[in-house]
Length: 248
Image (cartoon, rainbow, N blue to C red; front, top):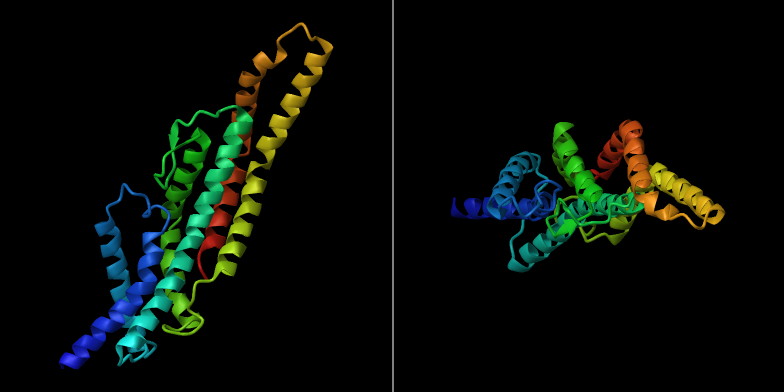
């Protein structure tokens, strides 16, 4: 009976090694304002739920030696970090392009706060990351993410040699995130370039006037006009980005 109890604890620990990093790095839960105990308890609850399902299906390996336990847990932890970092790549891309959009609009002051809580950021950078985290829970994508974690056990069995840190997966997800974020930010860059080009022509035709002193209000007004009319497309692209990000 004691051996059975020890084996169950080991199995829960193995499952937790993959689930824990995924939840601890999950956008919305990863910010420092949420206590680490809360994130750890959520990870433990999800791990126990998956353990009951995986154990009933006989998908968990039998580990009899300490070396096998350490090796299996290390592989699961590395693979869990890979899955969790895919979400961080998406949030990093949103924050970077949010800062670029803010710079194109002339809003360069760091008066916002990023969702990662690493410090202050331009206004639209913090707004996009916060909106993305809210959209995850509003669209029930956190359920899709947990389902994708459970599905990962069907694709890569616990303790398998394929359960390793995969930089190629991170690179592919980061590349896809950059492409969608570029589509999202394209209209803002186009308006900024058009306004600056027009003002440059006016400055050449009337050099005695301080044309570029008026560029700030035009850039901000044009940026918010694009945000108003392009907002639906921004939401659709962001939702597509978050759906494509889910590990599978």
